[in-house]
Image 1 (cartoon, rainbow, N blue to C red):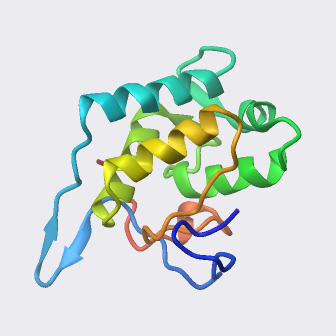
Image 2 (cartoon, rainbow, N blue to C red; image 1 turned 45 degrees about the horizontal axis):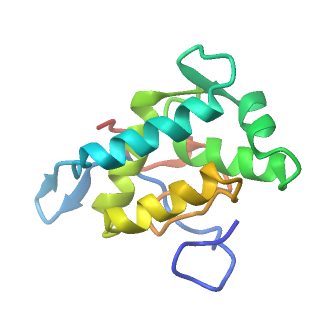
Length: 146
């Protein structure tokens, strides 16, 4: 996996944080996503939720990525998105992750491009969003959900 917008591997020292960002003395609320983006995110989520239980389990993520470094992609995905460390990613956690990506400065066109790439079998991408793929969420500064 690679840091979006970088030609270098993901640094291991990035801090992890939830969807609210500190801004001076206050916090900025999560960015909202367009209906089009939410629909595309739902398409990818549903494709990964193989048993249609309403959440994505690690085994489903491995199966989704198949032979494309499946365990590496699945672990990176879970380390970034499974905010409550339940070993299952709910749609709420998943959308919260993407809101965090947008809040970090990415536009929806970039998000949609990467989501489409994953729908077509591409790898998980690490974004410069304050989260990292190398360890579980317990190291986050904040686990606030959107």
